[in-house]
Amino acid sequence: MPHAETPRTHGIAVVTGASGGIGAATARGLAEAGYRVVLTARRKDRIEALAAELTEAGHSATAYPLDVTDRAAVDTFASAFRTIAVLVNNAGGALGADPVATGDPADWRQMYETNVIGTLNVTQALLPALTASGDGTVVVVSSTAGHATYEGGAGYVAAKHGAHVLAETLRLEIVGTPVRVIEIAPGMVRTEGFALTRFGGDAEKAAKVYAGVAEPLTAEDVADTITWAVTRPPHVNVDLLVVRPRAQASNTKVHREQP
Figure 1 (cartoon, rainbow, N blue to C red):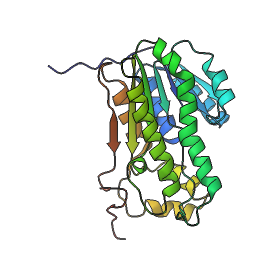
Figure 2: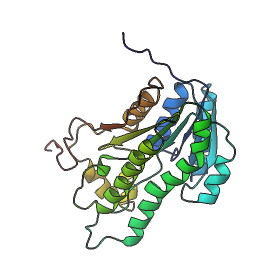
Figure 3: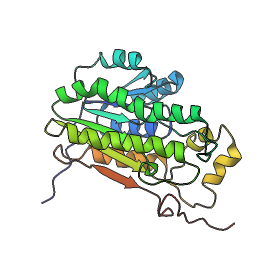
Figure 4: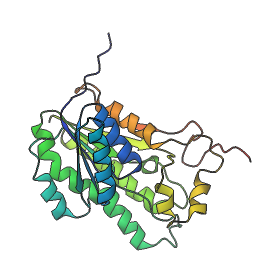
């Protein structure tokens, strides 16, 4: 007989980058699964609105403005918790699509700071509380960019490779403790802000990313995947789950309908 699903209700789930897209959708999914969600992001108004929405729906949700690259602020945030059931490291993002020869080092640095150092900061700060729960889960939302390269994406690819290696190494280092490490690596996801941010607000360039692709993944698709992985029985670890739309076979092979 297969194991029944045993979601750990009433535990605290911290979601970084919860102001929109995958982070907001994941917060909704975990709240519906019975977690008390703590929403963190830099955009205070967005997470407060989401917390109000979830509370009105009968869930437990708290907003906490936080920049994951600010280690002092992260440590202050972490000091408020004795135990945490789940940490979803979702804060990240891409900047630019320039080749290595002309890429802006400032963009590379910012992507590394957010995707890798931000994940490191929050994970280090909350690991004691995750361990104290007796059954903690660290989720790292990486990307298929963390597993294969593509032209014009080197800065983002490098950062997401860093996030992947962080998750993989942490899993090795803490084996035997009551904390599991899950990596979710989405492929092409259409959200309201990812491509627009990447191209500095250029809506035309952002739209070209998804041109002709009938059904890219949605934020809700990825959130469902994260929630499913987190709510597996405690002894089950989903080390790595790659999720792509059917139209995407790889980072460089995408089926696009002709206009």
